[in-house]
Length: 404
Image (tube, helix red, strand yellow):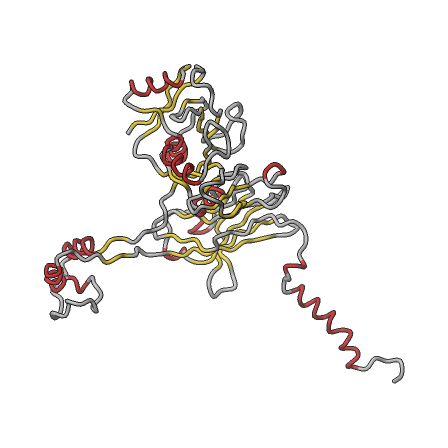
C-alpha cells in the first residue's frame, strides 16, 4: 500500500537503533561517562602460599563524598559471589569464614586493600573490590594464586656417594628418570632419612621478596644529586639497596606519595603519586610516574631505597645534642647512631612511634610516627617525618641509636 514502509525498509531504519541499545546494554566502556574512582591494579594476579598473610591491593584515585567498599570472592562455576567484608572507610564488618581472617589494611586514606591472614587452599580464586556510592558503582577484580615450595636439585660432589644413597632411599624423593637410580626397587621409606636427603639434595628456589619498606633518599646537598651508581652507593650506606619497580609499586599501594623522581634498581627513574597535584606532574590520575630509562652516568636524581626487618633494635635518646654528642651518647650505650634505613625498618616492623626529632648517621633529623596525632608532624598518615639536615653544631635534638 502506498505510504506504508515495507519490511526491508523498516529493518534498514530500526536495526542500527536496536544494535546501539544492545551494545550499551552489554556495557560498552565508552558509554560510561563520569569519574572513575578505583585505580586499575598493575598486577592482577597476587601470588601467596598456604599459611601466609597476603594483601589484595585496591586503591582509590579520588574518593566520592560518600561511599562503601565491598569485598567478595567470585565463586568459580557459580553465578554468585561470597561476601567477605564491607567498610564505609571508618568501620568494617566481616562476613563468613573468610571474613573472620580478613581485615582492611588502611595504609593511607585512599587504601581499600584487603589483608587475609592464614591463607588456606580454598582461598585461591578471584576477588572483587567494589566501590558503592549509589550513583555509579565500580569494581576491580584480582586473582589470588597459591604456590608450593619450588625445589632446585643440587647433587653432592661425590657421584658414587650420591648413587649409593640414591639407590637406598632417593627414588622416593628424586624423579625416577634420573641416571644412576636403576638399581631396583627402593627400600622402605625412613622418615628421618627422607627429610635429611630432601635437605641435602634440594634447596628452595628463590621465592617472593621478603617484606620490606621503601624510602626516598636525597643527600644534604639537596635533591637530584645522584647518578645511578651514586644512588646505589647511597642506599647501601643507609642500610639498604636500590628498590625495584615491584617494591616501589607495593610501597605506593601502602601510601608512599613522593614528588621527587628517584633511581630504581633496573635503571629507570620514577616517582609515586597518590594525590595528583600541579607541582607533582599535574592533575592526572594517581600512579607511578615514569621518566623511563636514563643515562646512568650523566643524569641525576634522588634514590628510592629498600630495606627489610632489622636484626637489632632502634631506640631514642632524649636531650639537646649536637651531631658529635649524639654519636658519643650512642657509643656510651654500646650502640651506634642509627642510619635512615634502620629508622624506617624500626617504624615499619617494630611500630616505633616517637614524636621527637633525632639525629641520624647521615646528619639528618627525623622521627617515626605510627599513630598520627595533632602537633606531631601535622600529616594524617603514618610515616617517618624529616627536619632535613640541620647544622651539625645545632644542639636541639636527641638521637636514634641502633644496637644489635
